[in-house]
Length: 428
Image (tube, rainbow, N blue to C red):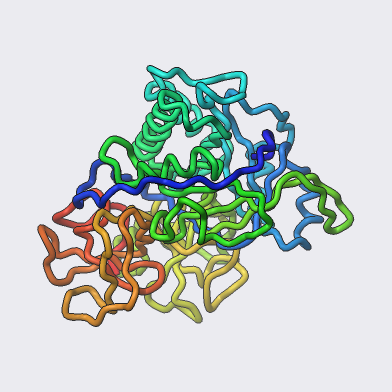
């Protein structure tokens, strides 16, 4: 990572056979709050030790980078963060930047950092770190549904006791974040933490993180073909790569010392402020057919978390989801686009890990619909946008519509129920 510059080297990995479908380790369930969403970022990012000023972030809008890694907490965080405030987060995300939250907590017992985890109590220590990470994320305005990345620096993974402590720590980190309604990410070196996580990918002893961000400074930004990490692991919007370490770049006349990254993975979710141009109602769902929840006066400031589709009002079928979980038509909100979605607002989606290998994707909610050529490997994220009834599979007739437009049975997705719909996912 940026704070410890260790060039990664590739190691092989022992693969473990697929686990039976179940909402337990290695796939632990996650629930979401009503007024939240997950945010998937695809593109180039950079991370730097201290968060830049707003002026520097404005200048760097001319760069190819569209996301920034922020060190938001952890006992081993060594850089001062005078800029990293809720106001900075609100301003930077309003510019269009996505945020990759990095937590530099306890490190491996055989690592080089000052503060290390215990070889016997790493589970308990991980829960404490996860709770601290959630508290700090919330204080900055990072909503549940955000991915928080635990920065696990390089260590000697030939040390069995050390490796075991790290895996137990990262498993407990994942489970606790899921309980707190956040996604679990791990940053790990391709010579230690990454292959260890891959070896445990289907192990019943460890919870699997939702996303893996590796360090491999080979100047290749490819998110596949990682040595020791099968392409079927963390396969659907679950990968990041730090491909170039410590170097200077200049954009907009401003020079920063950075690491370069590529992502297709969950990042932070935040609320964006817009005002309404007339008096409007908010509804319990994205349609005026749902019950009215409130009346909002003209020029009131709203906190919008994401956008979804619904019945057409004026020139748009877009509906805005608010921080309280209610919806308003986008037609009367001062977002820039009155026919489609408005950047930087994400589309509303909730990712859950899949629990069976080769989960079939279909063109509609039922087994009678045609299949897509590709399937979802076990542990993939199903980015669910809405749910609908369909043919029964296992114990449920619920089907999930994914962000790519395909459908999968909810039976093999780690949602909260295997018999009915899952709150707060909307109906299709």
